[in-house]
Image (cartoon, rainbow, N blue to C red; front, side, top):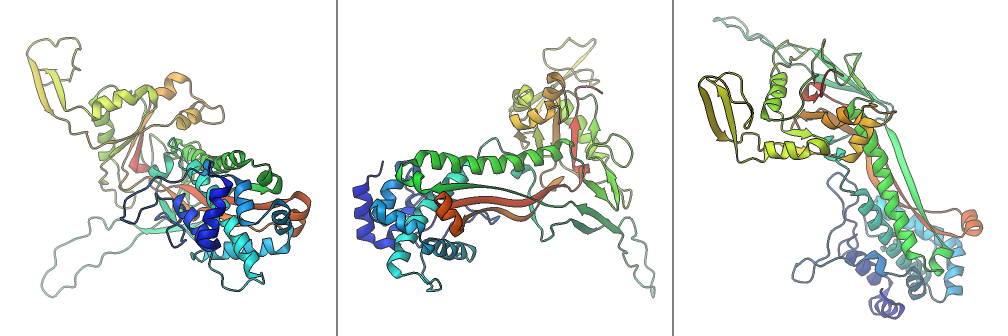
Length: 455
């Protein structure tokens, strides 16, 4: 625990602005200039601080802080701090900080826009900057729960539309090349209309409040745990929505105005193998043959698809790892006919034995208990344990079958509670996590699902 005396000494030696910047940097939420870190997607990120020589340091543990000690070190004794928290100045500082975050400038920078006395501005800003930084770190840690895999499977595509839109594309040219004789014009390649429909995006949001009682009863652990849960549950709700699209529980593929299920085994395309339980490399080869036979709807020609990713449940995880991580594969068959797994019944007649390097080692394996849950849920696929455990998926991640259409990625914002809330409920600040997006089936021909049997 970082004590009140050391907190006060740091505050007095660095000053309000230096104190806030230093603490936010050491917990990993900002750089040394007080600028928030950002992920390439635009959502908040955190990094380990660095020393003067550029070496990485361990982040300070948010749980080592005391909200009460922070308040008394920055705002003064309890009676003075409570008075500041109840004053109109508090909401003005929070509004200033939120504007600074949206403009990606240091939140301790005083533009003079708010009618706040300099000393009060500095004290309030220092306290709320550090507390919001502590909460922000915990929100991000909750967001980064390792069982969440859909952000990787469904890459992000930015969109400015809320209510859905046509995603326009051009079809393949097809076999239109022809001989050109002297004096004749070159044939022009025409464009065929091709579009799919983006569904309406949805906003997911949750907030964590900090009350005056929370600060002065020193319930730091409870506040940080609540912030961690905010990040976890917002991301979990987004993850479950993506999983339902991945499994085909929700089907939103609309091609040129016609709706199709994500997985079908006859008709416009075929990406279902009803009886292909995963045992050996032969099952992967069978799925790859299905990809080879995919047809472009605009031209009727074959589509080049090279799968490189698989999803399996825990029942098949080690089976898949043994296939893709083996140093070599072995083929045994009677005279080069039907293959037999090693250790199977001996073939009759001459035996054909071949050993070769593992060509499947580039496959990336995914697994998640949440996907299995939605397979067995009555509101999901409602499969029994045997069929859920044996179902597996294979797809091309370089041209992914799904996308997340995102209006804005995860945002972590300070909100400015109204004066009535400050007086009635004693809210000091609250941190809100939200995002607006929708999963979208982009090209179902690039994923194949494999069943235990036709059931």
